Length: 321
Image 1 (cartoon, rainbow, N blue to C red):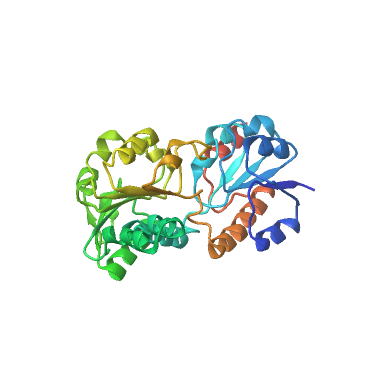
Image 2 (cartoon, rainbow, N blue to C red):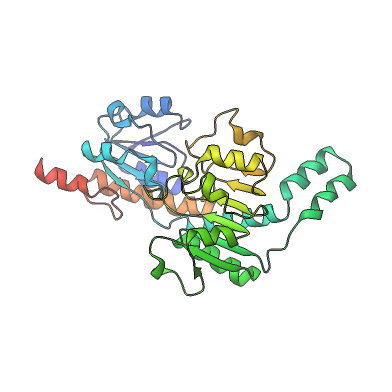
């Protein structure tokens, strides 16, 4: 019987599907050392966290990786293709949950919620209430979305129709933007937006797209939200901008090196809200993704092409091998 390693917990319905065909091993954590050890005897891995870059050296039996989401940067794809490992992902499976996270970020940042709730636990009532003096309404403010895919479209509709916000958008194919989003250059978007939401994939063009130069274009009163990929932001430059109050604040769900280690400079700032890559992690989204990832793993370990093959070149390599 083949073995599937669950690098991260998935919903019970997905586990049930897998157990009908495979032995299932659930990792107690997603640390690189643990994953390397448990993957040695695995034929497939389902992931929501980043695989070690050397995973296929440590786990030569692996022939399939199913991403429990969209993040293809979580897998060393070149090595996967070279080793004949099929990799699948689930485009759009958690788009609604991530879109709702973005709206949560806008509300929390605009209303200064973290500062107020923290002050209420440690300071007198009237002192805590002072945190509301800088709270803002979202109505008539401008949100700029970088990467207007399924997540960006949903965020744009909520912001426009729910709050009456103006919506700007920027992406590589500007002619495919929805009609209710005003397309702009990145520079104009950064200058005009009260909130900048990063929902773009990580590519050679988007790596460190937000850096010292582009951060300097933002309003001092603006907020930055990242639900795309961590390395879209040059983190050291963001830390400096936040520390110097060059922008008002940020909310981040993804990071340049995936994990925030203890003592990371971002953890020392009082104007950034940090979450550990949970934007798409609602029960509804996890249920959908778990069933879909399990189905993709069944296909791949049966020798079939998955519905969403990330590295189609692996099939060509097999043909020429």
